[in-house]
Length: 368
Image (cartoon, rainbow, N blue to C red; front, side, top):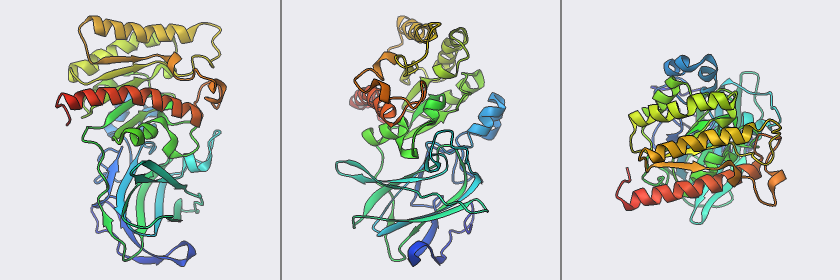
């Protein structure tokens, strides 16, 4: 790759798919805007939290935070096509029921006056050096804002965007003037079972509300460790969404960690809205032992305890609210992980609560 952090961006005009000429630019350089990553302009690869902090949580979190889920690059251009050139640190080829475009690919959205338009996902063809290149033709002309979502499970070393040599490149249409929403949770938060990166529920919410977010989903290893609670409490954010029920080994473990995580976060951020969520698959789970309801009760007790202590900025989203309509049995890929329909239901329910919180804070003059 021609561009690395701290180096001049590449001005090399190359020939790519269909022999179009493109001017390659490193996404770490302005006017590109990167979201969802830890210090992306200075780190040697794209990842989601400090390595030294992740290592104090667990070796599994250290590895998982290197996966680029929730990462985005945004920009505006009038180019008739957009090319992508990526260098991977690690390519997740074990699909686990997910297509390669989800585990290792990118997808492209256009910001429009009536919402976001999905343009195309990448046709993954990764070479022996773990490099990938593709050109995506655009259907409409004119200066528009685009979002490229990074892969859910792979690790990205560098990403370059190629545009027509004479095309404009400008800053994107900005998100609403709130700090990011931070999501912490299990493989569901991480985005497992989505068929492409833009369909994880946080990305859906981001497009619905035009807000920034950080995905701290750690598949199988969101265990509410105090080191993680302290790190999350140190982050600038508008709202915190806590959704790690599924990774708790038992309702007993959840009971032992749920309130302490809240307390640690509240000590750092006394007024930040805190949303407590229970697992979404209440009706579809195999639950002969009654664990789903027991876990729901744990989260409800934390919520009620916080409210009784005078916390007016804590919210509860009930697991029974997610997958409860006529599409119930289409909401999961398996008894646990949401399908696209399931992620859409989650985005609507969580997004409705977030909309209310952010509208109230905006009305109170608390926009950051």
